[in-house]
Length: 368
Ligand SMILES: *Cc1c(COP(=O)(O)O)cnc(C)c1O
Image (cartoon, rainbow, N blue to C red; front, side):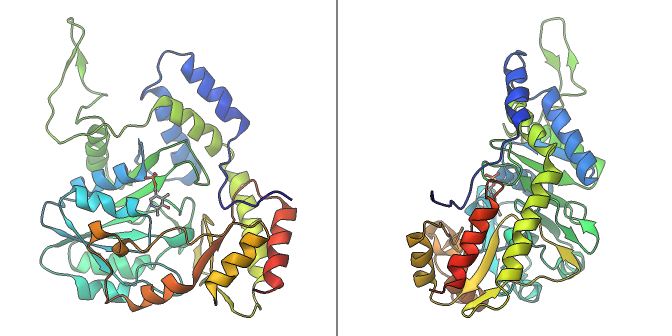
């Protein structure tokens, strides 16, 4: 049996067809395919105002701009995430302030957010660990009370639901990723979702150097008439990436239902295993099943046992405060300390066969 890997990108057959069409069309940069990708996203998830960009970090950066996070401001965030979530705060010359997480979910703990608020706090960044929605009601309430914006890094939460609302319709800004190993990939890419037309127009301009591509007027000299009034970036998605993303989005239902099937099997099989506990799974929300994380005792032994049986496992992300750029390990995050010691993720992707899944379950049931 060949090695069972943690991640394996799923590419629909049409991804190659659509990408080839784009490459033969002479319009390979941002163009119609990007619009098609945004429209498909809108229609599948019923989410207004999607702005396709080249990564989730770019989406977060634009969100921080529009939210008015300036140098010296503070942003409350989680350390239990990809560093991609928090680099944009540094880019803004603002300060990431790490709140503790919940051991049972890996998500930011609303009870710890309020304690960290100062006069300088402008925004809260929420990441949904493994695709399981954070406590958005509590977080939104705190943000409203203190007049702060909420930015969701929903890289792992595509299609996830919280109290019958789809992730992307709750906060001022929601950011999704279509990076190589995400359940829907565009090769690389992201989408920023905003809730109103004003922010939408601003985001559309900012992703392409502050230029309004729709309303600029062509001139006889072969240029355009426009002004630039905001800071802008080269954060746009290309037609090539959009073609790949569009083809994969068309298979979204199939991709998601297979993941649900695997996760269901994992959860049923791991209910009563000594030394292993599942993360929280409340009936008021639905995970996007981007990752499958559990807590285990003797993690090193667990990983070695799995590796010796040809199964990859991973802690996925190191707590961000461990890195020097974020100021070094904090001592005031006790739940994160616990989480960091016992969490481990198992392979979950759309190229896993039933045989692979059964083998992973059998290996774990044999103990470590
Ligand atoms: C994958 C991931 C990212 C990285 O996304 P990019 O689109 O590559 O920037 C960021 N945050 C989280 C939580 C992720 O899972």
